[in-house]
Length: 160
Image (tube, rainbow, N blue to C red; front, side, top):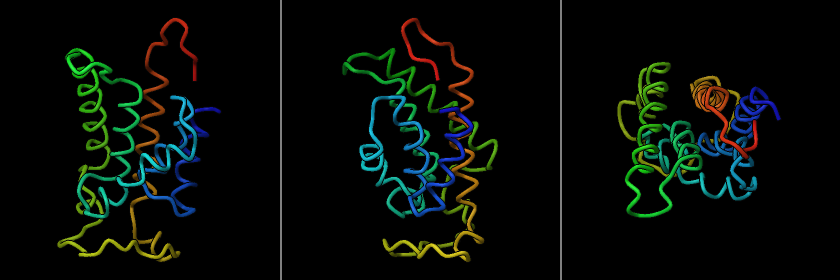
């Protein structure tokens, strides 16, 4: 699947009811050996600014989850791999902030106070019209697609 198709799939997933984090992770999960179902499970808690607490944008959280799938320390003492992961996350976060002004869900939504409930809003045309979330999902997926397109491919690694 082409990278642009994965970006489109991310927006389609969000528009069909999946949360922002799931929508970013699922289209790329197969590149890291994960099934759609596994990706849905591992990213489920990060939607709506992490569990609908309106903290770090769920789309950005999905982006950071992908960074962990690509670069992580498999040994607890592997400081170099941890540093590589943290550097990638910081780079992705800066790009997301550059494009959107913030990483904070509440700020992206223009909320002044907590909504105080864990119950997600019903997905209606009015919901989608008042939310920047489809744009945030597209942005996060596009940043990851650009990262994949720009990175060098290691010997023996599958190309995207």
